[in-house]
Image (cartoon, rainbow, N blue to C red; front, side, top):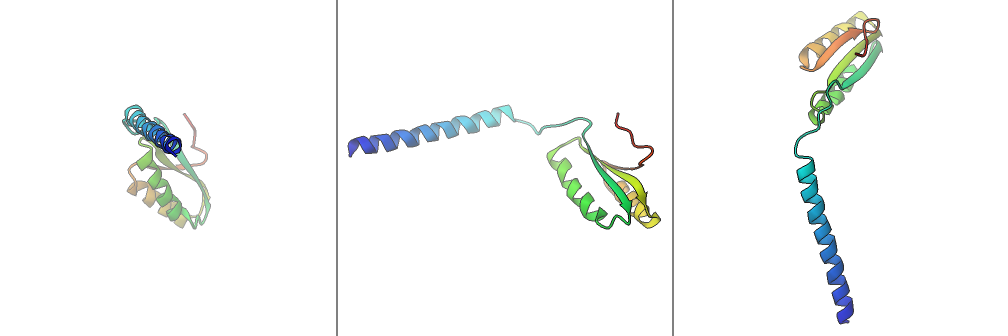
Length: 107
């Protein structure tokens, strides 16, 4: 019985120490948020682009986890109303831009 208790105690001690080392290493090695300079989140839009607002809302959450990310709304043949909405959304967001598909180039 003592051997079993000693084995269980040793197991949980090893798991506990591994957890402490893992958390300490994670805190030291990942001190800041990762930045990916030049990361572009490209959203091609066509026609009425009915889900555009929801898509932009979802993409807006990503730059919070990836500082430096930029949202690019690409006009691939949107209607005039949809383009106006896309322009409004691009103006409202600080890291967003509306571009025409013919002008879109990755640098």
